[in-house]
Length: 168
Image (cartoon, rainbow, N blue to C red; front, side, top):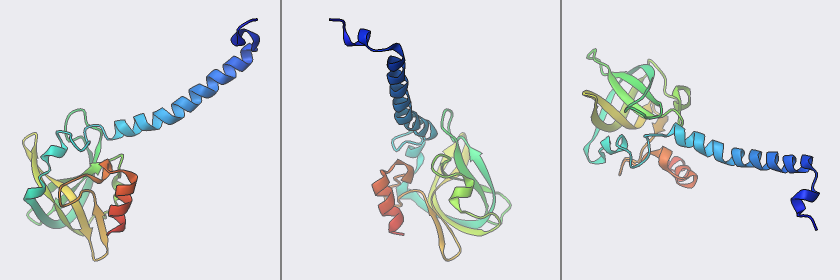
């Protein structure tokens, strides 16, 4: 008796091969793309080690512009804003990876006053502010880290993230 693959028409073999290829790519490509979108932003990354939850600070001023950044070489792009405290020297505020929230998705408005909580860091000789929470007005918050320990929201499981966002 011939092996089963010798008894099947070649077209059937190709259909099975293409179907399995599509299933494999549909399940692994999104994970790969997500992994690439958070490259360098992982909880234990050099970048996230710069955030010091024991040295929290608050800054306030007007949001003057937004920018896409690459904090450290090789990292996925991030979302940032510049805050003017009124002294003419804007502060660069790092928010999150673009894969977590781009400028529009943050909901933060330009030319509005903001209060930002976070931690100072020095990157490439420049003082930057790593945000944990941005507040504008009485009813808007954009929160990206736990203030207690600095855990980034983009590293949380969907269940943990839903719990944190529901608690606001």
